[in-house]
Image 1 (tube, one colour):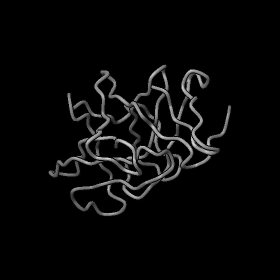
Image 2 (image 1 turned 90 degrees about the vertical axis):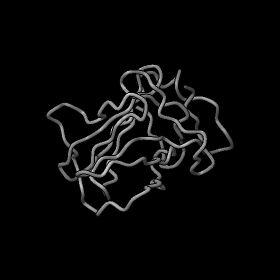
Image 3 (image 1 turned 30 degrees about the vertical axis):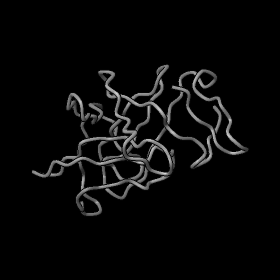
Amino acid sequence: MPEVPPKALHVSHAACPYGHSIMDPDVQISGYPSIKLILQHDELRETIHLDPVYGSFTNIFEVEIPQGAIIDLFCPVCEVNLRIDEKRSCEQCGAPLFQFTLPHGGMVEACLRIGCHQHRLQLVDFDSQAGLIQGLNEIQLLM
């Protein structure tokens, strides 16, 4: 399996399990459309924007969430919870995981604990998803 260096790839198309786009071209991070989700912590429910650059964590929170808090993330269109309903948990801290899908069967999976940066990218068909080399060190997912 090919190794992707941190910050060498960005997500350009991502969706909830029901296929709704979660990309937000109106809010850019690192020059790319962000990933827009609804964050819930206790009774607080707000919009957040995740950095689309894989391995970068310049996320935009509208509210302050304490480090170590476990949150839930939802699709901004249909409000489906993105928490993985499996018995797996974060390998680093033990918290629950969430995921969103990429075209061609790929997915991004990450920890729901604020401050934990454990995440994983799965490309089912690398050749159909990785392409368009920009410069010498940036790969754009074609989605």
